[in-house]
Length: 201
Image (tube, rainbow, N blue to C red; front, side, top):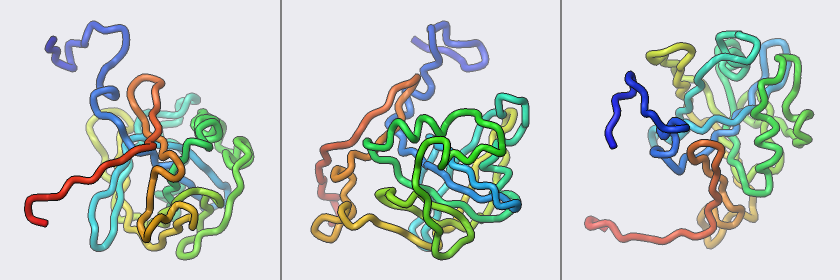
C-alpha cells in the first residue's frame, strides 16, 4: 500500500506512530515561574549530541481546553529549564496518569502519586526514584509546520543514575525494563539487548 498523508491512509487508525517505533519516552518535569510543578510524558524524544550532551523532544497539539500551548512548553519558555526522567516498567500506570489533559493548577506528581526531589543544577523538580534523570537548560525551541508543533532542545547540565541500574560500570536499561512507546495505545518494555561490533572497532 502507498498513501500521501494529505490524502489520508484509509485505515482505521493512523499508522505513522506505529512505523516510527519503538520510541523512548521523555517524562518531562518542569516548574513554572509561579512555582507550579508539572509532569508529562512525550514520545517524540531522543538524544541530539554527545559533547556537550544535548537532547530534544517535541510537544504537539493543544490542551483539551483549547489552550494552544501545553503547560510543559509554557513552563520551559518562562524558566529556561526542564528535567527529562526515564520511564521504567513499574511506573507505567503513574506515567499514563500524568499524561491526562489536567488543568494547569494540577500537580501531576501529586495526581499520580509520584515522589519528587529537587534537581542539583536547575530550579526544577525531578522524579525521586527514576532510573535516570537529565537536568537540562533550554538552548532553543523550534516551531514546526502545523498547529502547536514545537521541538525543544536542551543541554544536559546534570545526570542522575539510580545505583541499581548500573551493571559492570554500564547503565543497563534491562535492569528496570525501560518503557518504550509504539503506535496507537501500545507500549513495549526492553528486557533483552545484544551487542554488535562495528567495522571500525
